[in-house]
Image 1 (cartoon, rainbow, N blue to C red):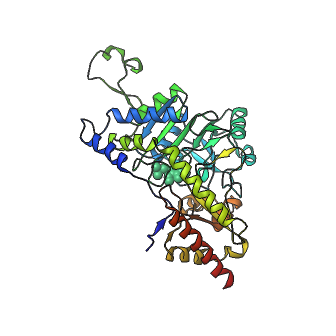
Image 2 (tube, protein in one colour; image 1 turned 30 degrees about the horizontal axis):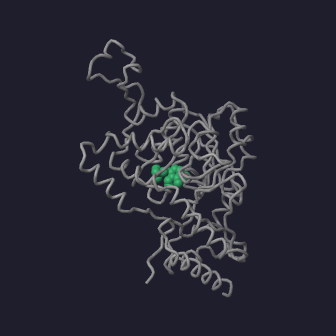
Image 3 (tube, protein in one colour; image 1 turned 180 degrees about the vertical axis):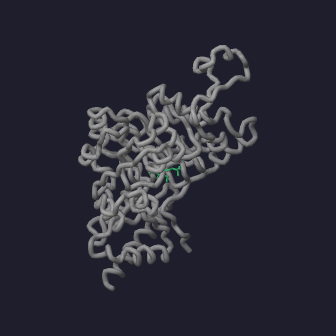
Length: 389
Ligand SMILES: Cc1ncc(COP(=O)(O)O)c(C=O)c1O
């Protein structure tokens, strides 16, 4: 019998288990050598100057917004087609998310609509690489430069992706890049996240923010007279306990070694899907733009008009047939909390349309070819049954 196949799943192998076990037997469960090793591996892989690992992608976003100085009333221009964390982290600091509509095919922020959303209060543009497909970063970066704004990439879906042959995380087109290592993402640490940057000032702030705004570094102390005391530390900002553990970082180190293999397998499955679903008249599926190599975190399909009114029934039927499909995302501005803040329905028609038609099919590296075939057959059967009904 085929198991329930979720839309995403971690791939944990013997080497990952060994890596974690070694740390469990070591002197450090947290704040030891593994966190730095993981951060160094991330900078090497992505080609950025600095990495700071956090306890989650949400904490990493919070840290990135703090590091760029987001404060009361400052605006970030971002996409509503994302997980709540992208905009919630701005709210944490008193900032205001301004939602810009998305491209109908990729679900990414429409770079052509960004300029008109910029006001005197805008501090940053935060593109979200939906499903792992990079946004049009060269255009976004040019808009940011022309308007003196920061760019923070929410790349929680996009570790291992590329934009114009540049690795996501290099910060070539942005000030900071944020990743999440939740189990459905391209690599996992259980929970975890990181910020990458090429700017030492951001790095220093991120390091402090992760640990209650505290520093011990002699050259960073305000009170220099105490700098020769071995015990001395200073709290210079209001920060949090957003530390990642060495146990998690040990898993991250072994996972990162296999990232290229994971991405290659995701691409292989996507190609099998493409061949099987090509020319079907039930749904459209994502394809990469000329500038993008996607990390394929998700495999989103979009129902054609004739099926849109039956999305709930189709979704339920797919689930009943053992496919752990999911919907990404309910546009953030439609959430009751955001409606209460004054965001209106119809603010982003393409995002709302995307939500009405989107279903994410299973896609993860440890899927067997039999499971991939099973997904294809089940999906086509379910859609055929609705076409006849
Ligand atoms: C686009 C996006 N941003 C931010 C986050 C937050 O990451 P985490 O769950 O690690 O806090 C997620 C996680 O689902 C995400 O998908």
